[in-house]
Length: 624
Image: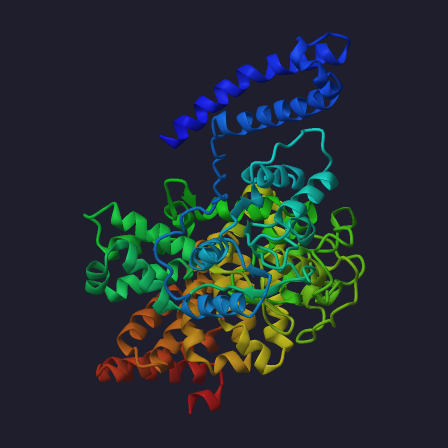
C-alpha cells in the first residue's frame, strides 16, 4: 500500500510541477499575480530555480526506478580443445609420474620427444587430462604437423577466447594480443608434433600460471625453456600388456609365446602394437599365432601394420618427407644395411662417396644441443666411385678395423647420420655406432627399392660386402664379434637381392677369420646362407665346398645325422680331379660324422678311401 501511495503522489506531483513552473516563469518574465499574491512577485525567480531542480531530480529518480533491469551477459566458456587420449597407456607409469612431478614443481614448458609412433601424443594427452583441472581458464590444443602457420595457430587460439581476429593482423600483432589475453590466466597449451623449436617458441604462454606441453619427433635441443623427456619404444612386457588391453587379456594369456612374437615383429613400437591389437580385436577368428605368422615376413610386415586411418608406414613417411633431399638419400641408403646396428664406416659404405650436389647445407638441424660428426669414417679415398670394381677390402674398408675420427669431413657420412638422429629417424647406440628401429629399417629398404636404380642398389651392396670383408680380414676380434649378426644378415641380403657372387666373397672372408672360425653358431648361420648362394648358380665346386663347411660345423655342434646328409651331398657334387687333397679331407669329416651316428662300417670305408687318396698325393701328414 505504501508503494502505491508513493506512486500516486509521484503522478500528482509530476502533473502539477509543470503548471507551477510555467506560472513562476510567466511571473518572473513580466506576468502578474492576482491581487492577494502580488507581494510574492519578487520570489518568482527563486521559485523557478527550485522547481527546475525538483523537476530534474524527479525525472532522474523515475528513470532509475522505472527502467527494466538489463539482462546479465552470459560468461563465455573457457576453451577446451583437448582431444580424447588413446585408450591404454601401458608401460608409461614412470614417465607419467615424472611428468606430473614436473608440473607441481613449477615447470612451465615440457618437451616430450621421440621417433614416430613411439606414443608421444598419447603420453602428452594423458598428462594434459590428468592436470587439466588446474587450468580453469582454458585448455588449448593444436597439431603443428598439419602444416599450419604460426599466425593460423594464434588466430585459432584467440578465437577460442572469443576474440574477433582481423585477417589483416600481422603475426607480431597476433602474438601481442595472444599474450595479452593469457595475462593473468591459468591456461594449458598442448603443441603436438612440433617440427622445430622456432615454430614452438612464439606459441609458448608467458603468463606465470600457464603450462605448455610440446611433442616432437626431433630433439628440440634449441628449446632452452623446456624440460625434456625423450621417449623410446616399450619394454617387451609392457608392449604385451598394451596388446592384451586392446585384443583381450584372456586371448593374449592363452598364447604368451605368440604374443611376444607379435610384439617383437612390431619392434615394441606403441603405434605398431596398437594396430596389431586393433586387428586382433576386429578379427575374433584369428589366433594371436595367426597374426604372428603374418608379421613374420619382413617383406609384407609394413603392409600388415595398417588398420583404418592408422598405419606405421604413413607415420614414417611424414618424417621422411620432411627431410631435405640429401638426408632422404642417406636414410634410404641405410636400408641397404641388414644389421640392427652399424658404425660410421659401414654407413659410409652404404651411402657411397660424398656427393657435393647432395650435401645438406649447414644449419638445417634444430639447435646447437648436439655435437655433429661432420666427417667420420665415410671419408673414402679420393677418386672412389660407385663402380663395384674395387680394391681389396673395398674403398669403405681401406683400413680394416680402423675408424675415422668424428669431425673430419663437412657433409660426410658422420654429419648425415647426426642429422638423421636429430630428425628422430636414427638412434645412437654407442660411441660411433647407430641403430635403425627394425620397422624403420624395413621402411628405409622400401624407399631404397622404390627410389634408387638397380645399379645404385647393387653398388651399395657391393660396397657393404667389401666393407665387411675387409673388417673380418683385418679387424680386431672385438670389432668382428660385434658384427656377427650383421654379417649373417648381409649374406642373406646379398642372396635375396640376387648377388650370389657377393655373398660368396663375403662368406669366404668369414671362413678365413680365426675369430669367426671359433664361433660355431656363426659358422652354422653363415654356412646356411653360403649354401643358399650356391644353389642360385651351377658352380658344383662352390656347392660342394659350402656343403662341406656347413656339414663339418653341424657335426661339431652335435648334429651328426644332419652332418652326414650335408657331407654326403658335398662329396656327390665334388668335381672329380679337382683339389684331391680337400676331397680326401672331406671324406675324413664324413667318416667322423658316420662314426658319430653309429655307422661304423661306412665310416671305416670312407677313412680307408681318404688314406688311399692321401697316399697317392704323397701327403704323409694327412694320411696319418
